[in-house]
Length: 257
Image: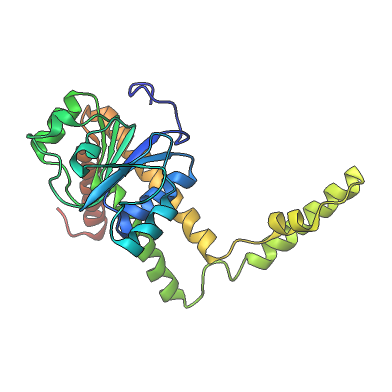
């Protein structure tokens, strides 16, 4: 982050999202929930911008109702292309392929490009961005979340038992005992609502989200370490790691060599 001129974490990072369908919308929602400021949202028929941040969920409701951003309050209505070139910390192309090319790459003013769409950069554009010191998080990594959760679903279907069913009550009772011990040791009473929030065991969604986060964090660290070791960009590192894992699996299965 220091190399990019940014502090760690998403808090107050300025984000522009191109595309407001499922991928773009939920990317914006989760980034906003993590503390980022979504300053620009781009759709096919226009864009909105507010340096102080846009209420993503309200913008979605308005666009679904009117099929346009025109009239949405407290924002600047701007041309979609011009909004794409506004300064930000994270640019999220979440709509089309090849939206950043050799023709427009020099207009991009961001520190990080997060490829939520498939193939939004051309190879030439990526080379230019790398030379400018802009970090590209490749689609092969960012789009892996959906496939990862599909894998979790497959595992659940094999076992015919939902995640969390076997351990939820055990975890809850363990937390209850811990809270009771704290109350006895401090001679205080924990509020009922707070007690329920602390003691409740993880449900299926909690476990899936936790597993997804762990998988994506580990994958990012592997990509980052390989990129440093080989002095290459993150896309090359991601493909290198994937090929290494496939080769290892083939070797262990006796398929290759």
